[in-house]
Length: 480
Image (tube, rainbow, N blue to C red; front, side, top):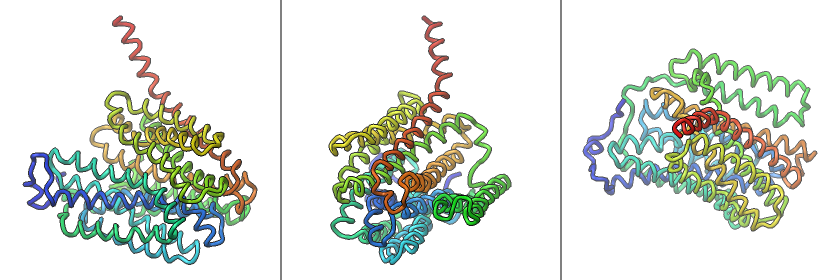
């Protein structure tokens, strides 16, 4: 299925060098990925500041993180397929415009519900940008330059992940949390101008026009209802009618989602992939590693600022240690996977992140806290960065695309749900929503529980690696 591309793309120089137009296309995609990732991770360190401005608790603002992730996870595959049908250039421009407009709306928010609502719609724009940015590059470069071009775009994504917390901390302390959202606007504008000027339209002429919007709506509504019930259960009463009705609605929507997926000609998620046990274990382990990443990002931001009293700027500096660890591990993961099994590397990474999390809850000097942060980052980076690589080895070649979509959706949606659950658990342990974000011992307890998830993922991966390791040992003994 070869996408339609402009004539100049087909005759592009295959000598490995990049022309001015080539670099402009890469820059457009790189800026798009950069702004989505940077905005995603910049918000963690702004939660305490926003909470003070709106007179609410930081844990109640977890919807700014989980709602954004829920929108991306539910619509990411739909966004990619929409681009294949209606044109990648058109869709990424729409996504960037939505992202920029909602950034302005976020910056002007006068209440927490206003900001949360705008943040969710911003996530819809991100769902159009995130999967299409790489597709724009792969459809433009059809020769050996494709690898370096995609690598550059992904590198900017990692830069956005690393810079996000630091940028959020700097702006929150020295300018305003509202300015962080406004920072998105000129970057989105620059990306739009580059796309319109240099990126030719491309689409998959063989792609079906069916979009699984019912499936996306069902899974989003189902998870949103469950998350709302968990978030509000303590205030409403766990056995109260509103809580029970919301839980029932959530389960009903998820059952509807399964029914829709079984009948959809182009389902959002290929449910038959779940019959593959090894694929299930790797996907679940990778999702747990991403859960660890999301929770340590949110909870450590609260701990450093509200329990330890650090300013947003100083907390952002310490967060650079975590980001550098994740970025370094993600960068080298592909090279390491050429020498060792991806599942084994993931397992080692999850053991490392679990041990690092435990150490993080006991270490007190901030210098050592930063060192342990690096260790946690390395483990997390190995844990989730290799999920897609590891799963691809256990599915047929013709289903790798569907498997990749399922893995990415699982990673994001698990992360969204985990943030809501962790906020509720933190409030329950602390005993009060208003003091939970500054309750250091309670935050440390939740982080220790999070380390258990990392260990469970590691043990699951070791379990599926063990048969092959035993077979290799027997083979070595026989040849000896």
